[in-house]
Amino acid sequence: MPMREGRAASPGAGGGRARTRASHSRESVLAEAVRLLDEAGAAGLTIRALAARLGGGPASIYWYVSGRDELLDLAADSVLAGVLDAVRAVGEGDPIDDLRTIGETLFDAIVDRPWLGAYALRDTGTQPHSLRLYEKIGEQTLRLALTPTQRFHATSAVVGFVIGTAADMGQELPEVVASGQMDREEYLAQATAEWRALDEGEFPFIHHVVDEFARHTDRGQFRAGLDLLLAGIRLQAGA
Image 1 (cartoon, rainbow, N blue to C red):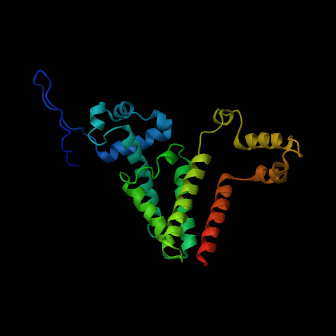
Image 2: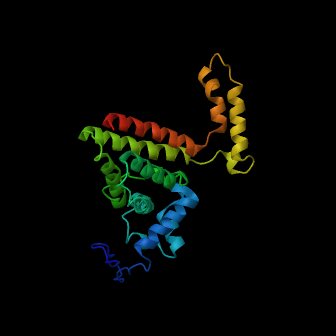
Image 3: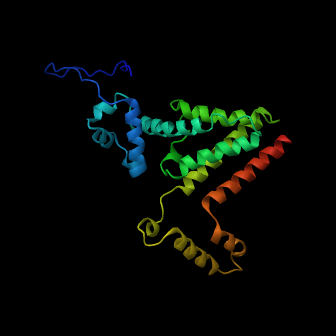
């Protein structure tokens, strides 16, 4: 990768040599940043920690990013590049079904990475793959009988629902589950018992859905919500 202009260090007061370029690549920096984020979350990703993982000093990271915010945006974008590749061929079938495919692929990429939801499509000016992914979603609405305003709102609704739901479902596990004191089924059973113990007169809706809550899965809940959203878009398009 060519050297960025304006990045060479000025000689020190004693006439020291200019800083030499880091030996690792931009791709290796972003790949290691993603690994660190997967292990420690956004709080664990610092320029110093990343440099140490790569075997250099902080200055070696600044060859490729201007700071931590840009690093986070580019790390997220590098993950979304894989989503874009996975859905690149989508666009020849029913547009609603294609929106569903893109939405589910994006959901799967985010739900297992609690850090990713906060940075996905956060700054499309510096996230080229995010911008292309947003374009890919929007292009499916071009195949529906919608106005520009309706297409903008439909695309925004799909993006917001998928990222928001994935970020919520992918958040850190409760301490009792993370520590191994309980598995997911035991934790869900405890929560279900607490719901059943509520006063039915005060919480009629909770008692009405408690059996559904007891057997639900996060992915099933997501898909049901996405289906409701897409059904609304299809209805609006008169398809």
